[in-house]
Image (cartoon, rainbow, N blue to C red):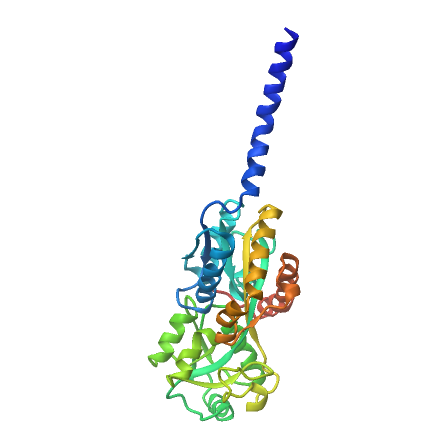
Length: 330
C-alpha cells in the first residue's frame, strides 16, 4: 500500500509539474510558428516599408515566416490595440513610430496606455524629414516659399500621416520658427498624403525620405530642404534647413518594434538579438537605412531598455506641448 501511495504521489507531482515543463519547452523552442508584425498605418508608407524589409530579414534569422499585416484606422491606434490585446507569446508584434507609440496617447482616447501595455524590443532607425511640395508650388527655394506662406496665411494645405505624427510635428516646428500658418490635413498614413500631393490636391508635406525620395528624384515633387544638420547622401543638391534660411528647424522621425506586455524575457531577448543582428548586417543596412536616407538607431537604443528610455524622452518632450495646444485627433 505504501508503495502504491508513493507511486500515486509521484505521478500526481509529475502531472502538476507537466504544464510548467511544457511552457518552458515551448518558450525554449521559440519561434515554432509564423510571427505577425502589425502595421497600424497605410500600406506603402515608411512604417509599412520598414516592416516589410525587417520581416524579410527576420525570417532568415529566426527560421520562421514573418508576416506583415496592415490594420489601419484611428492614426494607427487600432493596430497597436490589436497587439496590446494579443497573447504575450512573441507571435504578434507591433511596429510603429512617434504617432503610434507616443503622441496618440494625448491626441486620442485610447483603451490602453503606450507606456505600460507594450514591451519594448528595439529602436530601429531614425529618419530626417524632408520639406516637400507639389511641383507647381510657389517658391523656387525655401526662403521664397516662406515668404509666400507669410503673405498667404492658412492658404497652403499640408498633408500629414495623422494628427501628432512626425509630419504634423515637423510642420508645427516649421510654423513656429518661420512665423507662418498652414492648414494641416491628416491622412491614414504618409503614402496617401503623398499621392494627393502628386495629384495637386494638397500643397505641401513634411515627409520621410523613404516616402518622398522616389518622387523627388523623378522630379514629381519639389524638395526644399532636409530638417537635419547634414544633407542626405541620396539628395546631395537639397540643402539643410540651416543652409536654406530656416536655421534650427530640425526634426527626425523614427521606427521601433514592440511586443505585448508580459512577453517572457527570453522571447524578448531572442527578438532583440535578431533585430540587432539584422541592423549590424551591411547588406541589410544598405537597404533598410542608407537607401532611404535614414540612420540606423544607435547601439544603446537597439535594446529594450534603450527603447524604453527613448520613448520616455519623446513623451517628456511632446506630451506637454500637445496638452498645452489641446491637439486632438479625429
